[in-house]
Length: 580
Ligand code: BGC
Image 1 (tube, rainbow, N blue to C red):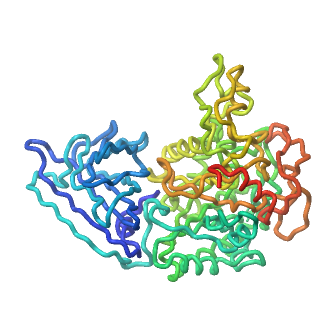
Image 2: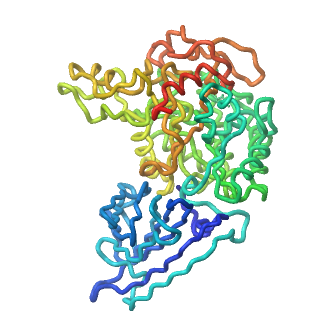
Image 3: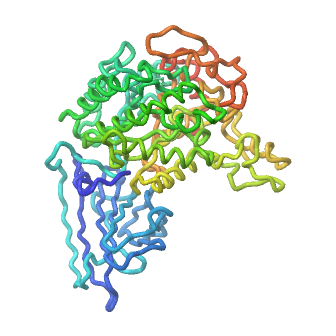
């Protein structure tokens, strides 16, 4: 959710055939009141009564430090459906937005961008005309004026420059790219057509994937198809940048083609060609989301000496610095393309949620964001739970709960973690990242492709309060044997369908891992992609220290990672939650 200076306002005029109403608000203040704020409100209608609104608040009065409250009223029956960067509530036509813990300070002259998706609007009647900030009417001027409300309605078009510029949350008001190669496999499965039209990530998991392989079209093919699907409206296409030297040092199933030292090859034969293609004028109107290097930096925190969970290959990658160098390079090169939105990987709550991993990860990500010529401005936000199975929300137990005086943090399942689900983890990480130095408007993505945990085994209420383990195990949605299990998990189901701005601080729920694609082979399968046999994908494996020496929980007979795994796809559909 990075804000990109004025380009954001140009971005409200992306190449859509919607009308944008711009209200320059300058209303008279109550006598004697010092006018202290300005609100720029822009609504984009996208038909069917649906609209998205960006609200820029500028404080023209004294600095506000203890939080702020913005109020306005709709003129009709519009409703706020989902908002971001503020706590939104509505009573009748009256809307209130209050600051979040991380944006409650607003210096004199400072601005903050918030917004919401709404419903119930005609083309242009979603526009309130009066706003108050902490009780002061926002006149837009430091000198009280008489009432002059100006309204201009413009038909939007692209401004000058290489592209439409970056918006605060690329998912808002945009369609999403459906990968036809994945959709074909999904719809070939019985019942698969129910989800074949969902947007999924396009994984550029080796150099050959740029030009295309037998399984999938190349990057140009995807982008051309994305332009066709966009048909002149905003469209998000999601790419996974995934080919670091010494990739995924703790999981043999996802090792890649580049050796730990091949950083130059990564730059010149992988990132540079991708950046060149993304920068082509033909693609300037796409919103290109790039999730950058899944599983790399978190490994440098948890799987290195002197941790008991250390893996020699991760020590090598920490010592040679090539993950940090490579991530910085990718961010800088891709971020230089005006319509590319970089999201950095933050693992998931069952990995980075412990106190000694959490802050350290945020700090390391900040270091990488400033490596190889990059700056934090190249980071739009972060993605949690990519290709993992962590429940989005655990409704039947919270981290604050205790049973007979024992905290759930002491249960075997939680094991002193600070978070019990991905939503609370992602929202908290966002704040910690801002503390580490990232921009206050960064936004989060959560991969909900396989974390639904529906089906007959899904609990319908809290577990018994006999003891803390019974309580947690009886109530948790996540049916994994251990939080550290990650390969082709038995019992998993499709999670929330992709959705823009579903919760505060969350840019979108996404399906970055295409459901039905394996996490790794159950047995060794020779291949030329660098993929090894990982015992965590073998259902008979009894585990290691990283999964508490538990069974792997993996489905049998799985193919190589990334290959189609029909049995898993069927199970994911059966256990979908929300159900299909
Ligand atoms: C694999 C990739 C694959 C991706 C998406 C990863 O685990 O290593 O090759 O493209 O999953 O299925």
